[in-house]
Image (cartoon, rainbow, N blue to C red; front, side):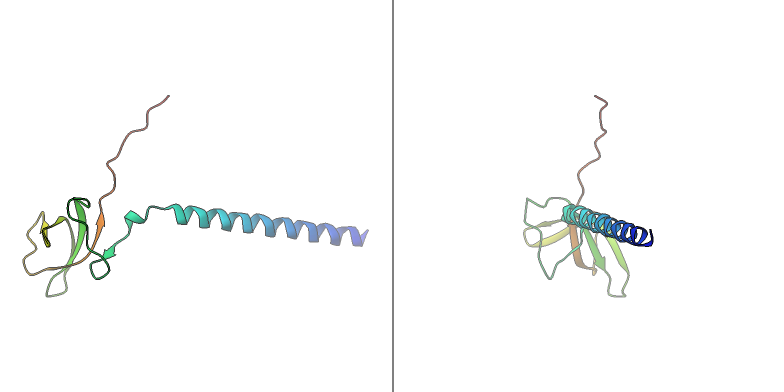
Length: 106
């Protein structure tokens, strides 16, 4: 009888391990599918494309180190922001998300 209990424990442990591996695999798939558009892109890595990446969020830093976020454009090789940034420097940007759309009951 003792042998049967130990064997069942081993089978249960294998099942739990398989379930855990399945959960980890599923979570990794979900993470990989998250929109990369919702990540900051340092301007040192890439600038937006004129007239394609229209309105974007920009992260700025002032000469005193104050950081802020604004809506901006990259047009003709220069930054244009909703609020004038003066001496602030744009450090990163990201596309704006798609507008919210209500789901319709079908």
